[in-house]
Amino acid sequence: MNLNQDKHGEAKWMQLPRDVVVGTGVINDITNVCNDLKLGSNALIVTGKKTRYIAGNTVHDELEANGRNVEMLITSSATMDEVKRVEDEAMKYGSNYLLGVGSGNSIDVAKLAATKLDIPFLSVPTAASHDGIVSSRASIIHDSKTTSIQSNAPMAVVADTEIIANAPYRLLAAGCGDIISNYTAVLDWELAHRLRNESFSEYAASLSRMTAKILLDSADSIKPDLESSARLVVKALVSSGVAMSIAGSSRPASGSEHMFSHALDSIASKPALHGEECGIGSIMMMYLHGGDWEMIRDGLKKIRVPTTAKELGIEDKYIIEALLISHTIRPERYTILGTSGLTSDAAEAVAKTTGVIS
Ligand SMILES: [Zn+2]
Image (tube, rainbow, N blue to C red):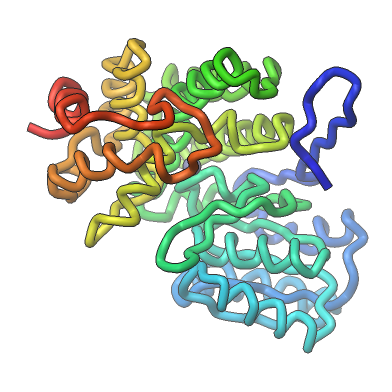
């Protein structure tokens, strides 16, 4: 099915989560959510080695105490092999739905496996580090490259802000980087619309931009160990996810800054967090757009998201190298980087002028 039709007169398919439950202790409402969605009796939980103890076991016990058959599978990497393993196990157990309980890998793996099996998927994030907790994209490592694969949106998102506030602050800050990068993603989308006549949704673009703006306006109140901060970021991630659902693609929240992040992941020996890389990418891409890159940088700084290669823990040379190959990451996605990318002089200039490298 083509979910990307947006031209006048053509069908438009928006897939949104049906239940989004955000708040203190909502993990204990998991059975109510499953009942509300009229899900079957066999559940398969995909969780991580650590997140199992943070939330996986709670979800397991909660569902089991309410008469469901629950199996649990521990995953440690978001690879195609793991997706296949989850599919096989789900078939074996006759699972009616999958729950991804964790911060990244578990959600991506469960999301894609559920899509392939054509069964419901519920997202139970233990951290708010990227918009994948709500979106219809799964980040999967394929041939040692991270690729973003179209999947079904979660049928429900159960985000317990008490759990999310207890996760390392670095994860929440990275989530903010992912949201702030909406600014450049939307600029890239507008550019592609003007230059390539790519279909464009004003509603999706406005929602995405507004989400980033609300977050930046509240930057002062995003602090470690505060449940109110976790709530703010989760709501913004949900809002970004809805923008992508309206667009039927990740366009409103993923442009050249995301290509830079994927490029960095493919070359740096020790990549940083997705949202951190996107934040830095967004500073530089905003500079290339001729926009207010200082606003992006200052907002990130306030929230304590890295704004330099040093803070990212990545050598300067990888920043330049990533800038030079970013345009090749997703060639069908037209951005400010164009079809031939930057020259090395230009790459060095943007990284130095914005203070990303010294
Ligand atoms: Zn992202």
